[in-house]
Amino acid sequence: HIFNCNGQVVDQIVLPSASICTALQWDRYGDVLAILQASSQIVVLWQMKTREMRHLDTNYKDLTFMRWAPSGDLLALGTAKGALLIYNQKTGKKKEASGRHKKRIVCGDWNEDDTLAYASEDRQITICRADGETIDQV
Image (tube, rainbow, N blue to C red; front, side, top):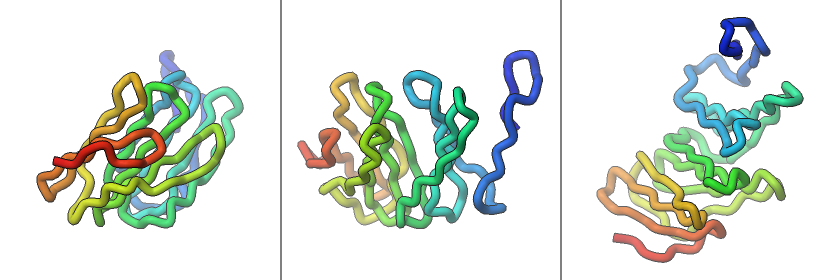
């Protein structure tokens, strides 16, 4: 259920699987809520204004990380196998980042220029542009 600040139900979101919710992330404008579930390759994108729900099929099972870029249009999604996918909400396109890790992506963050830094359990950090091209890996 989604509640407003007065505790009233605004909407009820029925998720595609019975597995637990592992992450929630609002886009920059607070218009789109991205929802991750354990062992699911689907990211649910719930639109606040229209109350519509879209399913983003990532083709990656076991998503472990997600973060919206400050621009509000890009969503980074990390996997348990070290891949990172960048989804462009405006165009609907998905692109795998060129810098791949050997282990689970555990965290990351965008800067104001839509440059992403993300880290893995393999103790490496990758810096990439919004198009997924690696700038550096340390």
